[in-house]
Amino acid sequence: MSVAVCLVLYGFTVAVFGPRLLARLTRAGVTPRLGVAVWLITIASVVLSWVTAAGFLAVELVNDWNRPGHLLSSCFAALRDVALGRHGLLVQFGLLGLAIAAAAALAVLAGKLARALLSARTLTHQHARMARIVGHRMPGQDVLVLDAPEPLAYCVAGRPHAIVVTSAALGALDDRQLNAVLSHERAHLAGRHHLLVAVTRGLAVTLPRIELFTAGAQQVAQLLEMCADDVAVRSHGARTVLGALLVLSNAGRLPAGALGATGVGVLARVERLAAPPGAVRRWRTRLLLTAVAALLLAGPVLTGLFTTAGLALCGSVIG
Image 1 (cartoon, rainbow, N blue to C red):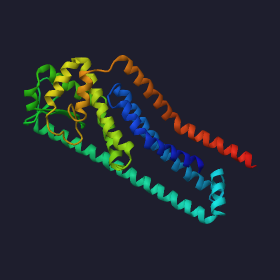
Image 2 (cartoon, rainbow, N blue to C red):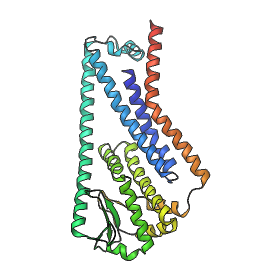
Image 3 (cartoon, rainbow, N blue to C red):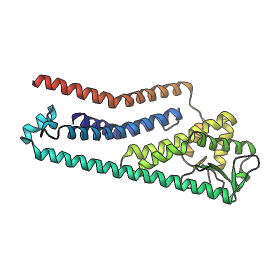
Image 4 (cartoon, helix red, strand yellow):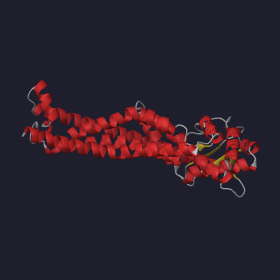
């Protein structure tokens, strides 16, 4: 049980203090791909810690079912016994009830997340299908053109995926800017960014009161836009991408589930393109993010090892 408790506390600590630290390191998009990776590692570390803790508790309950009170025979339990008195079947059944409630809560949350992901998938596939019906294909391009008064460019996942540009956007962008925008959208689809956005937004919708998930969804979406910007910059130059972003910056909201050039963090991206970070800042940020990622990857394992070692030492002292 002590391992489970420590894993829960580890996940809680990361969930509380992680968002502000990571936002400070990744908000400017100095290394957006590494930033996305560290956010995802952090989120996965917390989720896996809590799920593993629930698994440890369930296993211990099953193993010690025929030995009332044995589950709590640890240093922590001994201290609690001093304050609360002898434990037995009442505590055992209480823990069983908590375990069942926790399992039910996990099942409910997993169901909500699955429904959110399925809803997002259905929505984007329907939009891609409707775009292919209503729009017309741009000659020589895998792009659909929709007649609309707002200058929009975006991509939606589907079978097949669809890149959509409005007639107003075609009129506002020059050829180089249009090609940069299309390169941006193709980078989203090639990198499967829609899947990452769907998962992080699904967690944020399922657990809206946990800042790690809500802030993580926002930051990951912005960093993915910066990743797509970088792909476009390598082919068309920062000035062209910046110009296209400014041309489209006054457009309306994108369709739900779509990823577009002006979907998220336009101001931060404009500042980044106008004044790229220097080499020293990039390397410093890479080192800090790599260190954070290493700690997060090792954190749950070290927590379990230290807890087990501590229990063994405590048992030898008591014995």
